[in-house]
Length: 425
Image (cartoon, rainbow, N blue to C red; front, side, top):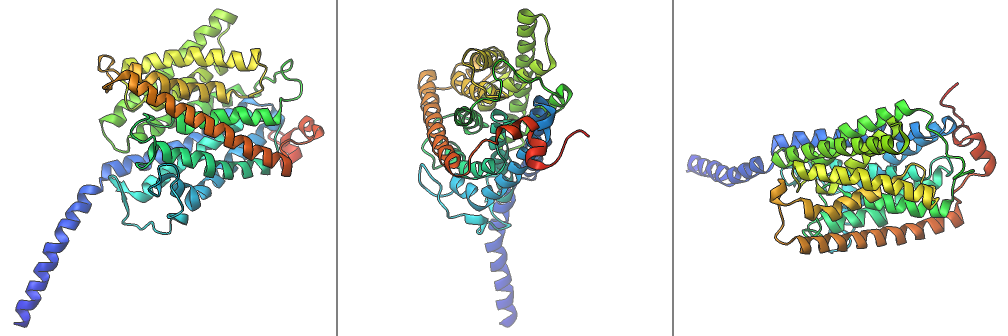
């Protein structure tokens, strides 16, 4: 009888355990997991060292290290903010507007937690790299004229009250815009939030001394090229990884991303050749970034021809935006964060319904007009929220900590004035 009971218990255990084990095996896909691990590394590579070199090469030599220091420090800070509160606000809770604090410090995240077809820890890391690069993009707006620690305070608060809530609205399955707004990899979540915030930041900070009569030339165009090339490679993970699977959607996202980037870069070069007779390397890679930003929201729904159209429009419209903001409006968004990222991301969001038709190789929508209204609603909501909340944060920080170094420090250069180092000895 004892032997019979033991055998019965063993069989019962097997019968109960096998479905769970089979379910776990079916849920965790090693290919998807490996791809998102790789994509996470690629997206972090975009910030460090890609974006740092891209921005650093565009400023004067005396401010080079200050740019690298800000991007590097934002990457470290954003990672911690994401772990302690950002991820919870973005992907937790049942509210359509705010995820809550249930996942504070990821205390409930176990090794066996699953998100889709991968361990949840991998999903946390992938989304963390997005939280790193988004505030780092804003650095380009205020280079050469902002203090160090106020930027860190702003970054931490901004991630919690601007970025993470917008992520929840659009990407969390309980968000009020989820399933309505198509934003595959962050046209609104990343580029619009950063671009609009960049404009607000410049409004509070003011222009660089001598602007617009004196516009500093990039001190290291070769570094700009190297950084932009790293961004291009990293964008394979940015857009391709946003499929959250190693499948055809990821492959198509990478293909259309490359097509859009190439098209926008050549468009920018041709415009410079027509207008100024001399196409520039810095102009070409700026067009490249415009094409990448423009295709980001649409990479999951358009085909190759749609990617070409978005790249062409991204190159043309972002070039015009740079000229409008810097030359006509004399607004010192130093490295064109709004004109390239903000305008490019919003352009991709609004153009998406019209170029995602099956005739152009896209997925198609039941109603183009309805989808456009969803895209427009999301754009208005994100732009308004980002602008108002960023303005409040900057107002408080400016009154309490100050934003701008004194004139003598700006003339000296922020590398030595704020950090006691020099890029070139």
